[in-house]
Image (tube, rainbow, N blue to C red; front, side, top):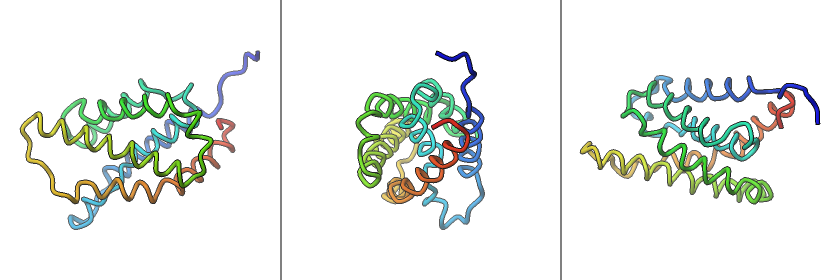
Length: 162
């Protein structure tokens, strides 16, 4: 056992900051509904890759940050993100064995669950329910997952985290 400090923690923080920035980056009104769930995707990557460093509580904090920067109901994204982070941490050893396309399908299911939880919160608070276009970001997350996985995996290796 070594007494060396864990390396690469800054990469998790910076990647979440970049994801938060992409979440609030101004987009044309016509394409804003197609914005991918960046923070959810990055949080899922870290939950699947280094669950001992990024788990349910870190995902809850990231969800609170999303709530703050988007101006949504405080705790709305934190609830969904912490629940899917729990599923990802519990299943990470199985999921890491899958080929990348099967991992993308698993991530897509988790993205759907997160959107469903957000929809439940919207309905419970009496807010208007969105149209079918509400589900498109999950499909974009499915398509972006392999690319995001490769980029973050490379950065994690260089930082000594993965």
